Length: 138
Length: 328
Image 1 (tube, chains in turn red, green):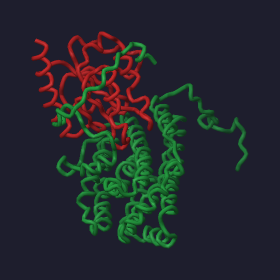
Image 2 (cartoon, rainbow over the protein chains, first blue to last red):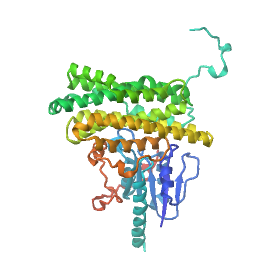
Image 3 (cartoon, one colour):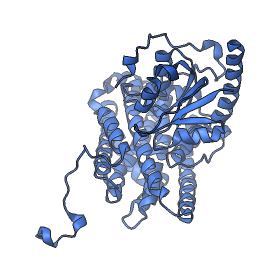
Image 4 (tube, one colour):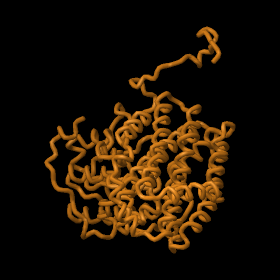
């Protein structure tokens, strides 16, 4: 089983989702001066969306900073995106942006802090995903 | 106004200019930027393209639609003139005050938009009848009064935020359902575009006010936090009771009441999440009609890896990622 990395702003929605998942996860700091996590194994990124009406600015700047490092980016295997369907076509847009930029799949989308159903699907999905990843890595 | 010299005023009352280059809370600037970039006016939406579609609705469907929009107008009016301004005295930063005044103004734009829809599609008499209906409908009046009671100047500022989040993130949805329903049947699609702009704004409003609520409650002792949570869930129960009756009265004839209620449960849970709370309604009660979800966020159908439709999932087009792309 590899790791999770996530970003959550001060509203804490994504952090609550990660707490509900109950899996080990490293948090990308809110403040630019704080130390970035340095994953050593492959990871899935959980990322909220902050797009405007045109979809601009979807990926939080701290997440861009985190992925801007080639060593960290090389370990990214997939992205789970958070958002709100009320934002229409830009719902969970950060997942699409990161998937396109980094050539990894969007594994899942959820709203705000997720639901029990989301948590169950993500646990099962991640489990299966890592098993498939391991078998291709060996 | 009484003439006051600077010397006679307490230090806290020194008039201060807002400095956007000294931000105490990053969320203020983030939300201000979002709201201002998303600014719109109803004139932007070609509502007149819905005239033909409007003519295909039955008399009852038209009357229902006008009533639903009148109910939404009432909520926007309350939020514009009372709700958002009532949050101003408790603002923690000058930037929060600026955001709240933006929210107040956009609520006026929303309220004004419904009248644009009316003047484009409806007769004066139909509209006048609906406004009279809104003043006499016991459920619409009951939910308005319940919210206004919490907005009252003597009420607890944190309870005011709870009521405000419930209005923004829950109470609108018995109404928003209908244009999404019409849109999913390829009717009134331009009107639905306008409503989506409103939904987008309300989502940011509920998120922001809920965020400020969470920041304020962080500092409270556990007992006070627990009391606020009890209050929030009790208010949600009371509002839900009214909403269930309002929904039945409006939607029974179309056979849509249960469908609307699933949408209410789903949105009630999201409203609670904006306050940092867990869900109230269990997952089976929140299974919203997929056509309504698709109308809410068109073109964003799930093709996730985990969602069961793995074969239809498409990996992003490979883009050579230069590190410069990520610079900002």
